[in-house]
Image (tube, rainbow, N blue to C red; front, side, top):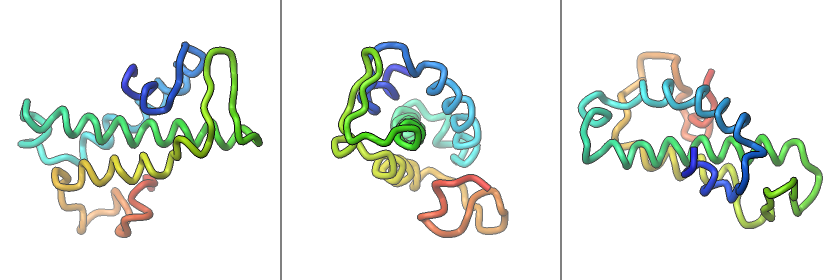
Length: 122
């Protein structure tokens, strides 16, 4: 969770429950999209974990932004400017990181078929 908080620019524990919810929602399903030989490899796993963390962090940022109408968000010890961190950019970067390690899902409906829609589970 620490790396996700760092990617989001979050300090303190005000969003720990939100982050944990996204970790539970995304980590296992995204892990299942990775080829086993890469997911279980000690050299590639940290790269995959970074990509998954970026996807989770981007979704956390987007969830926070949807609840706010300000260009500056500040709640207790959490603060960031919207223009500094973009959730969609992190999500896209995360999917680019894990792309070489993913299984081929062309015959399934687990994930969508377009890169833009890949960010959303069906």
